[in-house]
Length: 273
Image (cartoon, rainbow, N blue to C red; front, side):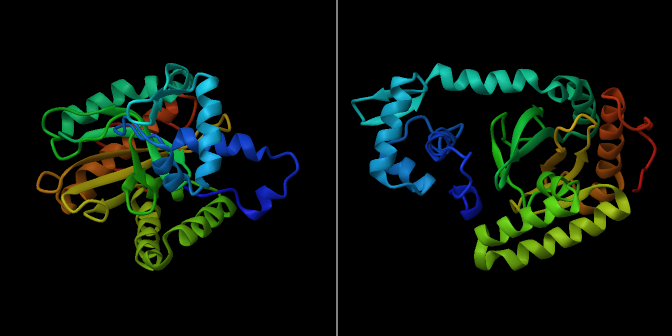
């Protein structure tokens, strides 16, 4: 987890202690259960004495629950309530559900919507069925930006200056692994320009293929991004390009229309942007 950069650290309006406290809460992942101070320190890159003070404070405020037997903590209901309140305010999650369900039924793929959380995309809506056994992600799951269809769609929906800033962050974060990831992102940009969607075929997980499409709103929020994925044997690259991708583009454009955006498209129309 990245600590505040130099510019942020010199911003007199920026409350470093609050930032660090939120970093501690961010350290908890959906399937973690309990975390100790040492594990939190490793994930946040904060000194362990600092983490100890923060977990003590968050416990007193009701955001963490201590489990003395294991000398660890778990998220308390107050912390989880923040997440549920945020989900309740994301109208796109609720409005997109019938669209996601329809594409899921038509394609047999898992369809999700997510937003950015630092170097990851986080799912806040997910539709899947028994045919998508290889795609076991739930609301709250995080996936990398650079190698996934959803993340790549998000990148290419950003204004040029914001995209350049994010790419610099990713380069710093991934180090020697970045050149290969950058090449994949550049290919994704060409695919978006030509077809309106991105593809990730085994670049994040070997056995998962997916397409991604960004959602742009007029209210200043987002962008968000959708994906549709399945085990590789179900979604061949040819099917991604000629069937799944165009379907997802049409779905997202129709969601934009429902939210006050672009003109609707039929499911059969194969849109290229």
